[in-house]
Length: 614
Image (cartoon, rainbow, N blue to C red; front, side, top):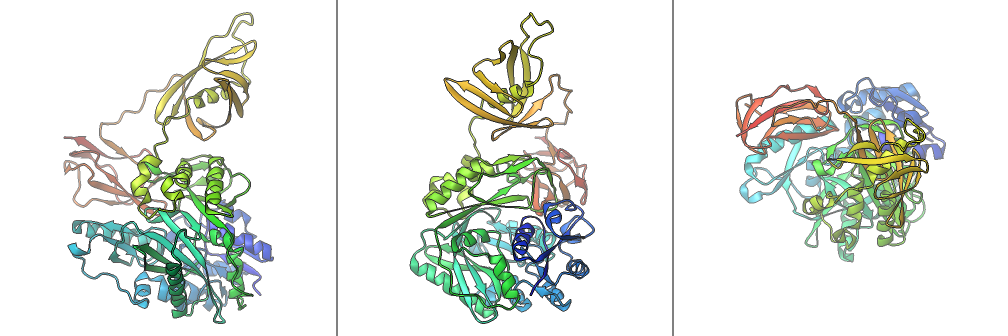
């Protein structure tokens, strides 16, 4: 029997595995980088072991250090989570060679399927060799790992070499393996997968389907189970192919077989030999704990009883610290508050006051709703997200709500091109709430003197300025003998946390929270501006500044001050949160300044380059 488990991972998935371990009475061991010294998974484990350094390459990708940590902490088993080393056969062997139990599939099964090139060969497929015009569009893809990292769509042959180079660098950084391959790109198919659970006694279960078509940068955003609207014959084919893949490598444990479905046909993508991020929707529908089953299988037990029957529908949304309106730019800073309403499941690796750094994936949490029907599950999840409190960096919360309510999605007609078609409309939030700045000002005024300098004279109008949705707003209010008053609304109540305004006879409530100069009013974020602002730091026209903290990993070949550049031309690449982001010329012109170098760490607002418009 397993008595102590080290999770070779971080964040949300480590916390999720620890939860099952605690319920089973199993002691837990965390590993952490220096950046994660105070992270939630580090704090909640029974024991924690430091991995010196902050980057994945220094820490969570160092299998040798993790095995040493497990031995030193007295763990007798290792769970890999997902990402990092979860599909690394050498790491699995090292765990076993150290006399520890590996809570995952056999190393030979990982080896056969973890490389997508070998997996395709196993299924009778092969990647493209020399790419020609007739093959376009194609997809450059990392052979190891997943999560959209190391992937590039190529529509012009001239872009292929750059895509290969960028994908290799990103894959090496995320997975420690820079191997990539090229395959045909299926336009606007549905991403459908089958959950597999297999024991060491010859039993293979397929636990239904999941649809994961809503993706950005090839990384899933919203997932659901079962996949809606699949013909029975196609669903049977998917299950048959999934079982075939599992049996072909003598699989054991939890795994997922992924497909693109287009024109009624299933195109095999890969088999992920690990737990998936979206596993909670399957757990909700089948009433099963997949982590508990992984542990039982690792202990040598057979799958108990008969295949559980599905019940209802479940939907999961990934809450990211990112700005979808700015090419999904990841955000950093303090997560002051995260709270979801009752009735949904929250899986997270963060708690109030935690810092969101630059080294790891920007996913804050997964929110999951389960209901008897798909329509009810979508409504429940959208409503819960709408009432979720997120105070801190910008997130994709509003995008998730609008996506869940979009007609194409509610009708089950979505595909992997959903955000390509609808992102602009989904991120156009319309006019910001005009009463949010007033509510912020009234909350800030709470507790101040109700009168002016002389108690028998009316107070002078008070002015506050806020930046909201890229615009500056100025509001006015007064302290009177009867309390606070403002133009355009009757102040029913005002304190530091709650303002109630009556507008056209209707009372509206505004929950207010302030963190320094950042103010959150319901779902609206504002920045309090000083009454007498300091002169702004002047920058030359055409200045390109860092949109996020990160590392300069590449500068376009041959570029130096004085070079002519074209609008949209890549100038340099930043790596942040395990993804590469390119900085491009805003217009045709001349590069007049390039003050950064490869390997340089930059902060938000750091000057990267200046392009003088032609």
